[in-house]
Amino acid sequence: MLFAEHKAHGLENILEDDTEEANIARLHFDPTRQLVLEQLDWGFARARFQGVKVNTTSVGTPHLTVALQRPPNTLRVRQVTRCDHPVEFLSENVIWVADDAETLVHITRDEREISLFPPIARTAMVYHLAHHFVLAFSRSLNRSNQMLDNFYRTMAMAEETEALGRFNGPAYGGSTDQAAHDYVTWGYR
Image (tube, rainbow, N blue to C red; front, side):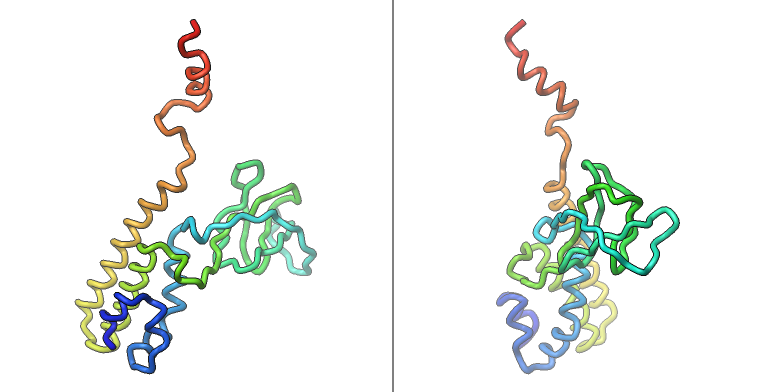
């Protein structure tokens, strides 16, 4: 079955065939999935955990001396915060921070369930996998570059969509305090 036909059926089906296309897909599927997850702070793969201090014999840096446990199923540590303010950190096999005050670790989960990916993330994966298919079967660098361009355009559209979900400011400009004050005092002068 051709890759284009698999696109209509979903990404999961292509991995189960005994075709040459399925072999290429199995080879590149997991790295492509991880690439798509790491590129953006996807809402479906975002998680926060309370930082848990661990004892370790390794050493961080001179000013990052406290080791926190890396949350399970972590693909990427995005941020460490204390009281909603970012703090400096270094992510290795543990997460290094400056002190042992209470922190939240913001991560991208290593999500493996493709049905949880939004359609735009699956589309990006299809374009990136298509890039590998073109190189393997037609050896057309121009067509491969077209697939990569489609991948980057799709990821740019996804960034715009995901950014809307991360917006934390007031919806209509001005300060939140002023908007609350205007709401409470409206009509009572």
